[in-house]
Amino acid sequence: MKHRLLPVSLLLCAVLGAFSLSAREDASVIPLPAPKTEGGKALMNVISQRRSARRFKSDEIPLKTLSSLLYAAWGISSPDGKRTIPTARNAQSLEVFVLFPSGCYKYDAKNNALVLSVRGDLRGYAFMRPEMPRSAPLVLVYVGKNTSMPAEFNHFHAGAAVQNVYLFCTAEGLSTVVCGGFDKKKMAEAMKLDEGHTVLYTQPVGFPAD
Ligand SMILES: Cc1cc2nc3c(=O)[nH]c(=O)nc-3n(C[C@H](O)[C@H](O)[C@H](O)COP(=O)(O)O)c2cc1C
Image (cartoon, rainbow, N blue to C red):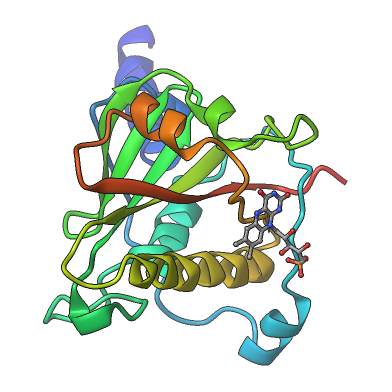
């Protein structure tokens, strides 16, 4: 009887692991399930309800939801490689990272995966004000890559991604706030970013605390 139960429990672990982040906490690559690319709440309702919120439960966000959130921010939405947000001359000079308690991961939209870049909890670098939440289960970090175009174009790109994330969170009952008030140099050092890469904004995401 024991022998018959073992494969079942292994299978269960594998299935749960596919949907839970903590089951993959130490992985150097976290494959994401396919994002949701259709449906959701009516656009004008979501636009009207969007708000910043700063208190989060520490509960983990399901991987499917995270995949859809990242798709909204910076996903590839057509076979020619165009993204869910516009970029100047289609330069795509943006990178999106996710800070978890276990480490900092880069979103690889092409392979729909998160790739470990730095181990350890960097979420504390994301907020300057002490009242800012440290309980959010994840923090997005928007990083601009230098191009020959004006640097402010990268802020535009991050802004478009930030707004998509706001709207996604509103539709999915998640809380978020964009943050520009923190030490970006320290954050870039902690993330071990290459030359020519600039931290632009952070955006914690989680279920509302209230
Ligand atoms: C560029 C930018 C930077 C921001 N930086 C911070 C920040 O560092 N900390 C914070 O709590 N909110 C920050 N916010 C959020 C604003 O405070 C918030 O959008 C504003 O109060 C309006 O509220 P609403 O988003 O709910 O409409 C920032 C917003 C923007 C657009």
